[in-house]
Length: 280
View 1: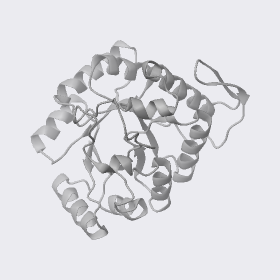
View 2 (view 1 turned 180 degrees about the vertical axis):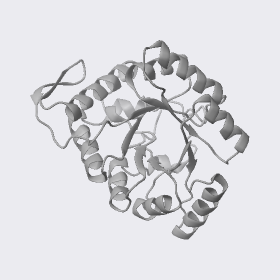
View 3 (view 1 turned 180 degrees about the horizontal axis):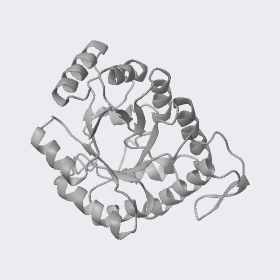
């Protein structure tokens, strides 16, 4: 399995241009970051972790822009994958977002992966004009339109939420930008992934990940997809038995949270974690 690091970025944590080289130097394979453009102070949507409007962490209010973060990380690294866990594409203009992602991928030498979410915070989505009952359709159209812009010499797309005529747009990503969906391990989500994405990112609330990974692989095959889905599992502390079960079930990547209180603390944590996991 590939082992990576996820940082809940904020204006209080270690800057990405400081953390990303430490991640690469320690031997980890990837660097994932989240996205929240804003958090409405009054919300009806419940956080999936707390079950209420209460947030478990004030970094939700202070999250850095993911593409600026990954561009900064790209400039000071050479090998690690640069990814989102997760971005919220429907809160942006799809043509502009496609350009941003393609640019970061171009400048990094094809190291970008796009982790996306449907969006649990319906109040946040509403401020961007996203209808709660149509967010899955909207995300599908955004992904289809961005893929057309990344792939086609003259791209065009006609949908309910995205529409543009034949257009030129460069740079093109050097390869395919993998799309991973961060969502609960449900049959509905697995079917959506098999139809529209390249893999799954678990949530902190998911349990029984080995069993869920096996089911996703079955759904993947039932939909005629070749190969196997990429499955990215969030973990807390390494457990060899659990990691062995996950690997046997088809988990391809495991992410551990960053320590980002200081550069020294981050480096010591990463070196220790790398030793435990033998990532080098």
